[in-house]
Length: 251
Image (cartoon, helix red, strand yellow):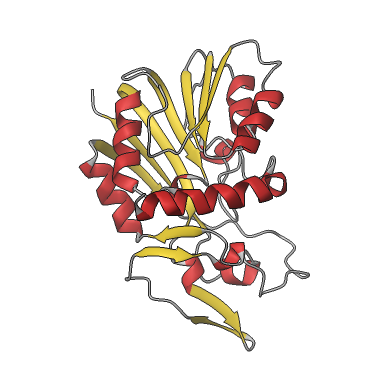
């Protein structure tokens, strides 16, 4: 068993315990905390009759959004048994084909090659323990000309911590690698990667980058916010919480 397998097992165990907390959270049309939404960005374009694949589909709410907007096949994979079970229940009334797999994104659980018009991942891709392998898989699943859109926590966000009435950098942005994650009370391992690493690995995997977005949308009412929260308005005023990348597979 290698280190990455150990990390996947640790993360799967934590997700099985915590899945209910995340049912329906951070799902399309939302991309993530303090971020523009799909209703504002319109990155997907026309979803009608598209075959779509959700990487880290969670409770299935993003796939439900896709089905409600006319997608004609809904496919997804997720590491967590509980998430896949919940997604299957949520999507059972969809009038189109639904195929969900319990699998790490680093492995192909039986997905077809050159098949999907759209692949996407909403606040899930950063869980991968092998970014290049995952992106090569996704590139393989897509048709030529297919698009891949994903969002994730901005890698500068957790470098900043609120202590003694001010924000300070308490971790290096430049040092990459696996870390126990404070937001999960150090019960999961997430790789810290620079934004440039995501961009360059996409390019190395054969993708063309179309758009990179890290604009911040602050709520109108921030009076009751607590600056020590993981996602606080005060922190969002300083650094983005979320980034989004749209890429495509060359024809």
